[in-house]
Length: 188
Image 1 (tube, rainbow, N blue to C red):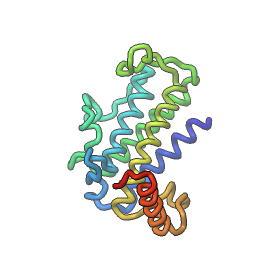
Image 2 (cartoon, rainbow, N blue to C red):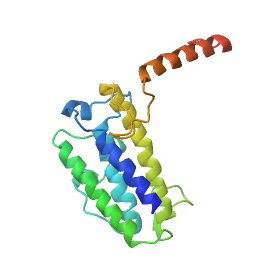
Image 3 (cartoon, rainbow, N blue to C red):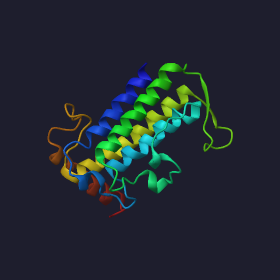
Image 4 (cartoon, rainbow, N blue to C red):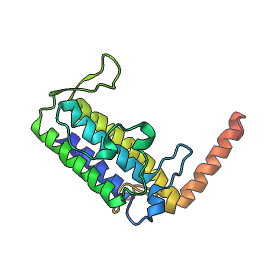
């Protein structure tokens, strides 16, 4: 199933973004809102367990840090939570989600209690699309955070999907931005 394939591809990208980083770099916030690589993985772990577990009445025993999560706690990798443990838990969430995906039809019903009234009744297909969207969104965050840490960028270890001379491209984009500001009369 293509939906499942796309979900797995982007899951793998998120784990890859942690490769070779120090403990500090895996956890450090690089945006004013605290976005950090390991926190993104932890957040998506809870989403996978929830959207492919509780939503379809297939709860998993996912660990204490996934219980009573607040939004800020959701993205916080605590000092006692090792990177290895968080990644292992993320992969367990995949196994649980994959079992749900394998066991149910795409039109199987579920319920998301925190969705807005009138949108709480969902299907497995809806949750697959939702998780692909959610995971891709956070993979984009991870791309930017990783690039800010050490300049490493791209879609996959073997597929950069960036211009070969990206530093020259950066300079070209800056020139175009300045020219557009000048032409429109809306300076910096």
